[in-house]
Structure formats: structure tokens, C-alpha cells
Image (cartoon, rainbow, N blue to C red):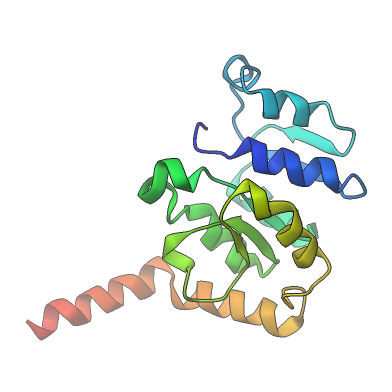
Length: 166
């Protein structure tokens, strides 16, 4: 996916060699190998690049994971990456999330967001050291409850109420 900020991911993964990072999804290696940061990332010993898995399998993987990482080129692609469907899946799992800036979630304080490569490593270090309290049971419950309040069926109910008022 062209929207992924491989440079920020590389900066994090290279700095935190004691953490294993697992990536899942479709990988056009002809395209990705042209990206110097993906190429460098894929050679690191603490990285595994994996094929896509079903949503059900991803839920199992998330439950075993320490955190989820979201990193898009938001300064370039803006609204195209402002509300990734993956974030709701991550929120629903309850695990902590570290993300690039995501406009749709900016006011909820559900997860820390970095704005650019200059701050990504420092913010990730604060995140992984739990300085934002993302690894607490209260934070986990807040993420899960947010996801439950924003399911498709809940959104449809809200829309129906708006329509019926007219």
C-alpha cells in the first residue's frame, strides 16, 4: 500500500531491536523493494513479514500482541488515511495502539499519535514505557467501549434517528 509510512516504521523498528514486529498483509515485493525503508526494514532480525490472514485470525493475533502499529503518510494523503478501518478493529481488540496522526480520532485520546518522523521514535519510546497509560485495564476498556459504541449497527441507529426527526 502506497499510503504506508515505511520510513517511520523503520525508525521505530531499528531503534527498538528488543521488540519483535510482525507485519501482515498483501505485499507486492516488486513495488515494496523499490522503497528503501521497506527494504532496510525487511532485513532487520526483529521483523517478520507475513501473508494476509482472515479477520478472525487477525483477532486471535491481536489478542496475543502487545500493541498495534498504524503508520500512514498522512501529510501526503490526508483524508484518504484519516479513518482506517483497521483502527476500529484494533480498538475492538483492546490492545494499545501507536499511530500516525489520524484526524478522525484526534479528540478522543484513545491512542498516541505522531505527526512526523522527527518525533516518532521519542513518542514511541514514551508509548512503550507506558507514559501515556495505554497499557492499563482502564485504557483497554475505553478502547473496547469506543469500538462497541461505534459498530455499523450503532451508526445505522444514529442515522435512522436523524432521518426520522426530519
